[in-house]
Image 1 (cartoon, helix red, strand yellow):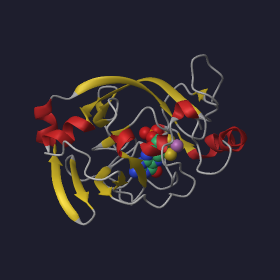
Image 2 (cartoon, protein in one colour):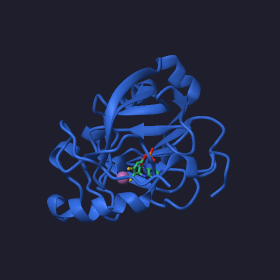
Image 3 (cartoon, helix red, strand yellow):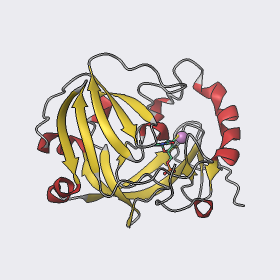
Length: 224
Ligand SMILES: Nc1nc2c(c(=O)[nH]1)N[C@H]1C(S)=C(S)[C@@H](COP(=O)(O)O)O[C@H]1N2
Ligand SMILES: [Mo]
């Protein structure tokens, strides 16, 4: 079985090492990916109030484009030069009539119930993408199909796969286990409280057991 071991490489953010390929990485690495809905659709809400429903044809009409970006998991692995295809989230929101910040915070939720919290500034940044493809292939169960949030300046855990709901909130969301509200890679915001430098070694030791080789994962159709 492939063993992943990040290696030192020039030009990576602080504390990161390089992997040759993107593994499947999940909070529940031994479970298969969740069953996929038939097509890309994202519900946007403000508290309990529905704001918009984004379907695949809206994304098509906005003109999906290719964006090259590196990807950095908080456990210290990085992969470089990924090509995502999608539409900047800010454009999607604008097309759905959301041109101003509905609320200062938001929670992005995946169909596997994994979620990540955001401040508006991070979510509306230029490089944040609503992605449907990776390296020329439609996103599948491994990498978060049919719709994935891609936010290259933040750690992997903000890049919510199987993206289903974006919920704006007036109050700061409760912290998700170890996550940092901002999680900016350049500032090494790995964890809410613990020192990022002190976490590099123990997090790095998690990469081997938790990063799943792609071939070991069943395709999208399998059920939770
Ligand atoms: N829905 C969902 N999104 C998720 C995760 C998850 O378990 N579920 N894991 C996160 C973490 S920690 C990382 S590093 C990346 C991994 O993406 P990949 O599996 O495409 O490599 O997805 C992120 N998004
Ligand atoms: Mo991660």
